[in-house]
Length: 213
Length: 355
Image (cartoon, rainbow over all chains, first blue to last red; front, side, top):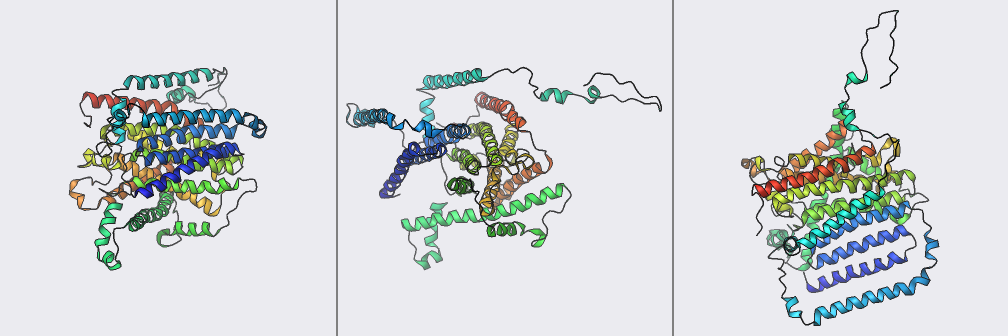
């Protein structure tokens, strides 16, 4: 691919990301906001692919777009919140939001400067990042995550598990009097348990037991 | 595939006659031509898939099925397509117009772009990605949006309920599909679709369906749920939701949903063939002279036949049963199989050695 073409595609994805990011906060309809957010995720994944980080790009789509944003959309669609009411105070909070944005920008700039002009630049540049021709980046990430960072990786997994169980425990309520389907019991039920065959003599009738099964 | 075409075509007599050189402009044309070479046959096979689906369904129920248009009714789908094409697109007054129209396009596009990574033979995929299987997973997880957006934008309770059902169902069953994929990937040692097929080279005995039979069953049932096929077609349950998320759609917008749905079913059949039935390889090496894509076609057809049969003879699930099956049966079961297969591979020293 030409360098110029790669640049062009980068600017295309980058401008879509920024524009949809702006539309997330300015769209009137909250459902539209979430849809713009999804577009932002999607074009960010495109940027990842452009940098050769295909594994991260796919993961971004699977996790954020496929699961997290679906839940966002669910909540936003189901809740009946008057968003125009909430939006009234937006101008008051704008300075605070802007301040946070500026702080984030400053941090990013500091990071960029440190990465490019810091003392250990040479060390960073010569970091053992295998090239794409040697190994795929799924493999490279796997080698790193499951050797050097195995404890951090497993701990974060464990924290997520605990959080998940916690959320389930908090929302689980045992409602008495709810009739639930017990598929095992249904399958174990034999015809003999449910009814019996009776020879009825003509003119006599049968006495039925009162128990209902 | 694109690279091969790019290098090969200018050397043919037609390429020489037209004076085509290996420029970036021609590369662009080559990509478009290859995509068309996949998409056009795909759309035609979707039309025939609909026909076969109806024929199989009819045969199980001792009916004739479509038999009027063309010989044996073969042209029925095209007649239906023409009818839909000529009808008026009706947009409900309360609908959110933009999203209402974008939703079917998204569904249809997503159903087509997944085919980019399907290898039809050795070196015969539009894009032979390193993360091919993750790409498929990503695209299928995007598929939810076409449905949610259509349900929400229709501004109808039936459509909305159908969309919510569908979204919950697809998200739930994606989890077990993911674990099934993990099992297969552990045996292959790569996320690349071509590598997955090549790991099953040899004869029918090397196909993954034998060692992975239990997870193949899980995959097949999850694929039914993922594509909203009966017995899991709750999103469009006509008895309770009229037609679910499609209820407000007419003419081409409906046709796009319909085509997308069947293209997705064919895709799932193809993925099943690649993961478990050796992709483009012949069942016995003697038959290798038959081109690989024909084998893949036959295997995909077999997968589709199973989809159609299930539709014919399994009654529809209830929604709570569907959710129970997904979260309480398949999730623990597939998780267990991941651990089991991993342990077997570690202790029997069967792991593919990747450096």
